[in-house]
Image (tube, rainbow, N blue to C red; front, side, top):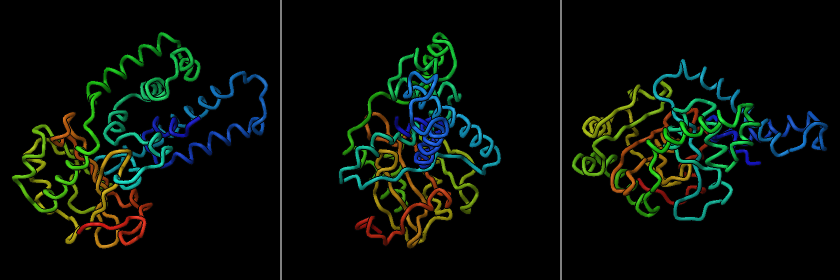
Length: 292
């Protein structure tokens, strides 16, 4: 059973090892990994344990978000350089930040049914047993979740090379304050989210919608590094940029592109220092050569 099952349910990839540990502890507490009386299907039992842990964790996160300052985004899962081969296990557990934001708008049960059915391929009958609902209720939940996700996420995605070029073009324009270039690369209905948790001065406290407003936000120079350094990496499987203020991580920037890959329709900036604490310093050899 993949630990990503639970992580996707509460849309935070970074605690996937903790989710795996909780599931294993629940299993060992029952019988030390040996066959258990009354458990005919250990795989289904373990998935049910993971789902229940994830839903409880989800409730805790929801309560914390009630007092969170500004927009909330999932913790970024930073992977290898886009020019190198990533760990296949990491790729399999990576879901784009944009998709995680969409999943965040589903109810907990809709999210559980969607992840188990669409991502991991569980049949409705088995999902019904896992979440203690009837197969008819699961089919209804699955239908609502699919309609909601497909309305906000296209089935077609641009080629990785196109996404990388668009990311580099956007970063150059944003850091250089090139208004004309930004107006060209941004989609008219673009939205920018900045998750700073109230810990970065002048960070926007609500999503910013529309090309003109987002351009003003990006070129205002509000509280950013004086001499930004960045490294291109994959974040949740998407091309992204990690920005540094001197040697310290300052923000992770992820773009959501139009299906053609030629315009930016979503900008996700994770700048909360607590969510960046796991990243190495800019001079760390693991980053390789960067740009300033």
